[in-house]
Image (cartoon, rainbow, N blue to C red):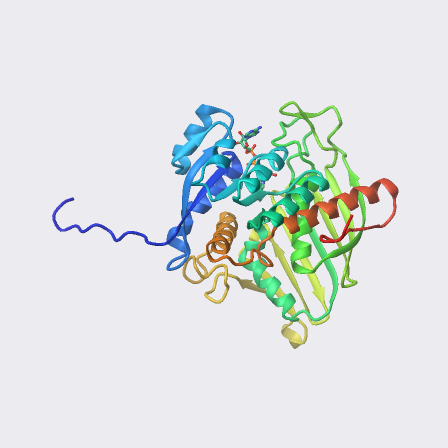
Length: 385
Ligand SMILES: NC(=O)c1ccc[n+]([C@@H]2O[C@H](COP(=O)([O-])OP(=O)(O)OC[C@H]3O[C@@H](n4cnc5c(N)ncnc54)[C@H](O)[C@@H]3O)[C@@H](O)[C@H]2O)c1
């Protein structure tokens, strides 16, 4: 050490060992989020220790380990599950890999994070939820949009009665990447599983439980002969759900992968007796708020949600030094690790496996409705089936 320097004090906060499956889009997003936590959530918080990352292809997972800052890599996820240094198993693998590795991690006593959709089949989502509850481990479904500052502020406003009684709610998630019938598909999942489940979770988070649905699916572009990396492709380019909530409010939830010009538009509008809220992920730092009764100046006000009193923005940067898409994952994983270290509940702000299961049940009821042409009741989580 050169003269004049002193060694930096050690970071004495508890380290939490993480093992992650997957090094693709979400593997990078989760790694990036975990690496931002120690300096942002300070003092307090914890130090995620990036113990190991797993994937199938050795050269690629080795490169990912170096690039994303993991200590070690493995070509079999079981290495992570068997490692006592791994306290949290983070499943950022593809949809079809959510069930078996996550169940194995739960059986090994790990706390578990799983990307959405929790499982492709409701029975599998139920198994995951039941196993995690029985084992007493913390569990998180990655509905990361709950952790956008605007979404949390809207949640507080709705729960605080600021909108009065909700009269009409609309949720949508629109993208465009299936519009071209010849383009290579990045994933086999259709509109419901790839983005619709996020819209369903936003609806449940902001409005409440969904009691029943009427739904239609359509595939105007994607035909049954199409494949993605040799797998069949789900036949829903679009889904439209008419949802009746437990509270009695009726609203719509839709998702589309064939909306030209809509790059990543998760958006919603809530209309209540006292006012309205509206938000879009494409302008994620702005919550539009309308309160009735402001005379000739009434209308929607654009609130920039990056002030110190916006709870999910406060740990980051000074006023209006805006946040990006990746901060949702960072806030979500910070919340989860805090719950692990302090033994606090993950819900109601974090989506647990109960929320992953609930979203799957809304999806299942939507398919049943589309097949029967009838309104279908959604079985609540916790009810016997
Ligand atoms: N929350 C979000 O905003 C969001 C966004 C995109 C994707 N997702 C979800 O995240 C998950 C991962 O999606 P992605 O976009 O990162 O996919 P991806 O294709 O970019 O990456 C998937 C990773 O899993 C690995 N993998 C694939 N098959 C495997 C196997 N059999 N065994 C071990 N590893 C395997 C791949 O090598 C790759 O590292 C999916 O469930 C997806 O639905 C969530």
